[in-house]
Image 1 (cartoon, rainbow over the protein chains, first blue to last red):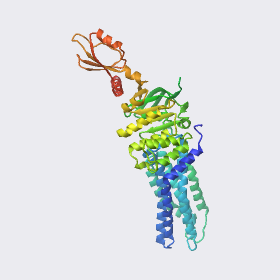
Image 2: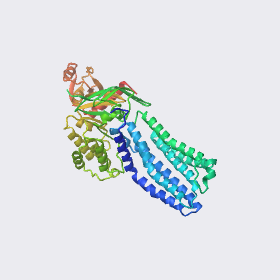
Image 3: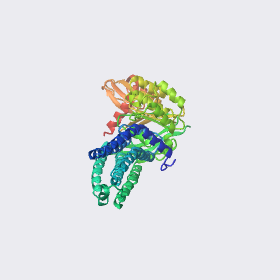
Length: 228
Length: 298
């Protein structure tokens, strides 16, 4: 096989391997996220705030833990030597790590985000919050991609921890900034869903960051020559 | 003539505080190379280059006909690798690891894997984190052997094992040697283990290969001569002397080029040969390293 080629069957096996090793983390996060959502149903403002905090903790926590376990720990716990003794290239390993993290994270992320949007869609809920909630949900996907990139490129606990801290801080700052953009804030507390051009641009920019971050990670990793 | 399984030609790799310098060696198919060096001598770096995990700065590496690291995927299909610093996934069972590895290698032999499970007294349903160090090494060896590799690369596999586990691992390696086409590279700083199973020996020190020979030739050529010198006689100039110990009257010479003719040479110069001692691989290794370090201080 040519060095530059990617064996997709091997990549699939590696993704399934990471799923198998992290399945309880993911399966455990879904009821935790849904329980956090259920708090909103009490209808009180304080419950909404607690629920938002808990949801952020669950989603960011899952993404950070997944990236740490699948990338940093693989080197720290010396399972990387076992993996790289198998007939696979570094490109296949990197592709599998990026896809595994993304796909596995998408499972709780999709369920919890859909749940949050579903709760806001219920009669009597503040429907105007839906665009802002969608923006923040995608923001959490972007920050997880940033943590995955840091974990894979630095392969260090310190580098990943810095990315986690920056992500947590970034979500709060960006959440504050987005909530105060005129095109978003003007409709946020209304009863109608309004997808303003501002909200759509922010959302598209966030979506564009996902392939950009992960593609850049793959490019940088593909150029490495020493793996152990 | 058998094919060359591993070929290093002028391979170098520079790190900030270490240089693997101009390594050249050839390993014919079916041979068992004992790769001996102190900690930090360059054994693991050499092995990582062989496996395609580290790219050499200079030189060429061919493994099973494949150029490394470019063709590492094809080469690693036929390589079994066990390293002292390699770990399996603690949260998964040995059965899961077997199934995972079996799905990757078309030549996986389940009957052989089951036989190894019994021989090593391993329970497939046990999680790796519940295994002792010896059991983990045996589990890694099982995974490396059961896909029937043509080249087995073992980087310090017996380090940290208790005597019973070490004996079991070495016994299995001896059994593996029955396959004459299988080539083994066995790295260790434990010369006893290497001496038991190898037919070729390479010594590495400070990133350089300082000896590479057939084991029997090496053991035959190295001797320690205990002489008695009369007061008037001077120490005879013998070939290959690497170390002179003892006293002026009772010198002990270590030679790397022993030949029975050396004995008559000693007698001719007035010395009495009191004893000619064989040397263990460890003694040869230590004498070799020390003499070279004296000639080329760090």
